[in-house]
Length: 193
Image (cartoon, rainbow, N blue to C red; front, side):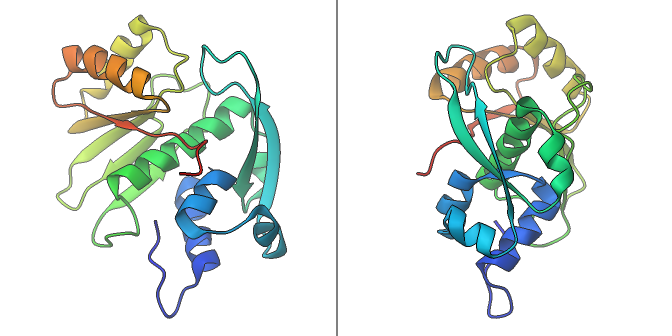
């Protein structure tokens, strides 16, 4: 994520990341910056605890602490918060944003639940390519995935992320049939490893 330098500590870098991602999970912060929930709260970060269903086949709800700086995200649905954190995980997997610097831009609109045919994020690479970013928490049916893939094929590329290896494999097949240029990555914002 944002590079820690002599001028920026981990909390400064997390704040920069939240400017792009809006919301991440406490597990992501632990993995990326080695900070605890107590340390986050002591340094002015907001934690919103929710119980979510991580995948369509999950039988149990899982408690998740979402980390944010802007209190407006506290009013967002569980789905919205999970999509924001999942989209941030894709950004991390791609090394996009502050990590490598340069002329690139990242925007996340994953909080817009009603905008189902709009990508969760948009990555404008230094080359000017516009890449659609989509997080699938395994709740989309195959026809919806194909429909979204067709729509996102209008971009220069598309990257999908999913929280399980099983869903990544299924998406590679589904998305690849429609747009062979598409990439699918493992993006699980609910793991500390």
